[in-house]
Length: 406
Image (cartoon, rainbow, N blue to C red; front, side, top):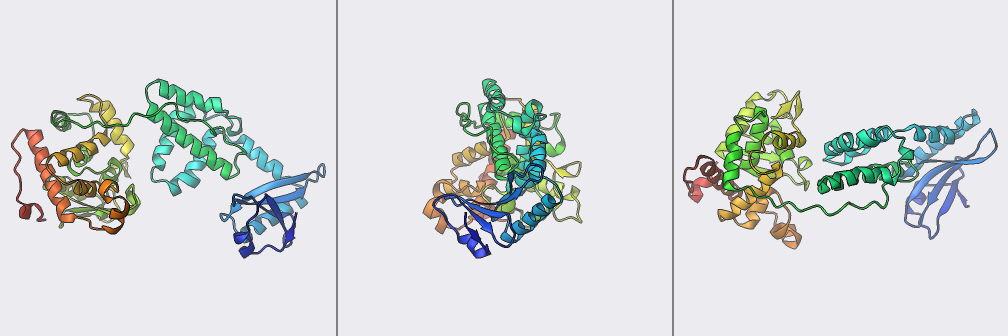
């Protein structure tokens, strides 16, 4: 086991063929453990006062913990040992006392909220599908069978896709816990999804669109929920993007809605031209929003933006006026409808902010055109067609010069 006056450059560049421990000469007991896969972990080795047994406590991984921070943590650990404390026992006790719900709260706070745009869905699945069954269990006591019981019950009930989603969140949570040294092993390792999810291809017919649209005023849903659903039909955007619309994203003068990259699935800023029908809804919502706060959400519930989950739940519980459908079916319906109106595929992709098909690969890398006039015409044509579907009146095809005018 080599001893070395560790330096930041050495820690960053060292590579090994077999797992090797490098003992620091500056802070005695600090060890850099390097594996052939490139993983580098900081540990502290000390002699326990009670029985003089060698103990090892993991401090964390590099580069999350730098050499400077590792030395500070190691010094604190060595000091605690000198005072008669047992850091390994303390850490083991905390780990063994942690319940699945405690672990889930840490995962959401320390990882999901910082790394995932869909963290709220992770939290919802944990609270609704996982905690009622194993939330009070000690995280270290959870077995593979406990997780299988949850996902198999959901799959057996016909919810294969949701079963897969639950497994993905649980697996990520436990893997994160292992990586963060909250657990030694993950009980989700090796568990496979219970069957393949059926790919959704539901496209609403004109009659279904009309029935849903006309049911909105009398449905037992909030006005804001109804407005969000109308905007989904008028713009073809994702439910979470429409639900989270902010005052600063809307330019009423130019009839545009600019979704920042932080709120889009592909991370790219997306400009959505607003048809007169869409603009009327957005304008009314803007008038009701906090005028002193540029980031004020246009659609709120108790001061917080309405989540896409709430929209999906409202549809599931109160708007099943046709055979089962979901808000995402609207997006597929808009794309299919625009294609039926003769809109070119690459324009439909531009409207939906998709990077696939024509815009994928080399073509997508070199073709950065945003097609704003074409997108506006496509959405105006679609809004006119939608109005004709809802009212059963003939659609009026706009001349291209009129269609692209703001």
